[in-house]
Image (cartoon, rainbow, N blue to C red):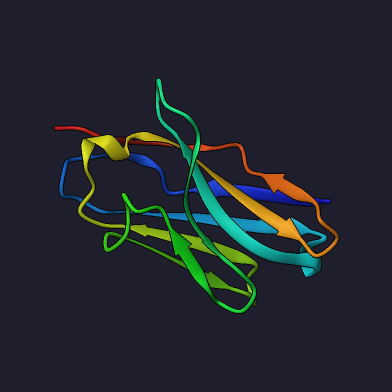
Length: 116
């Protein structure tokens, strides 16, 4: 079992920045990839960014150049630095992890609202 605790969401004006954090505990030694999905009102849930155990990253086209995902393996923590935020980035952001045994675990979600 892996437990994920997210933090860092909130309200920000367009053009602003936020940094999301997600700390893993439990069987964190089995973690392979980590990432962030997001779910906006009226839209399908989508990948925002992910990073594997080698540090290889992938991003949704809509966030490339503005979001940066990183991880601290010693702390079992993944971060999502979000810059130049737009109203369309408003969503609940969910941290997830994929384990080497094929399991998937999700955080509780953190709300990001971009509005003036």
